[in-house]
Image (cartoon, rainbow, N blue to C red):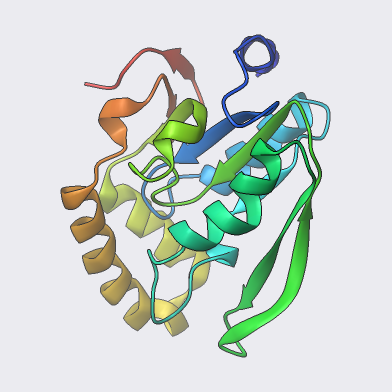
Length: 186
């Protein structure tokens, strides 16, 4: 993890003075855990969680919010803040700060989508099959969210069919072992 953190710090800025790094992969592949560990290895790099920007009605409708609330302020050299969606209340209910930093992480399904890629210094892909990731997510979330997972799997599949991130990854992480590898996944 330390070697990857050093490599990312050495990249050219991609979003104003920031090196924006996306962590993408299937739901349940370990993106949030990995991004947290990577953020810590980077000395406390801010992490934007796309689950906070998505909504029930628009699970992938967050690109505009990400751009206006996070990317544009960072590109202008300013701190950013974004509205956080409350999945229980079904509305945006709080705000999360994103301080200007040398490296900022964005994690979530679709973090490497075409609308975000021009802002990225690096795309990291969590390599775990959709089936294994879903199984892991269902185990984590329990039977109460089984119906959610059914709908989510369809939305995720449609998203990646239309706008795949995986071919654009500069780094892959094995979702089982955590092994970090350079280059594009096959």
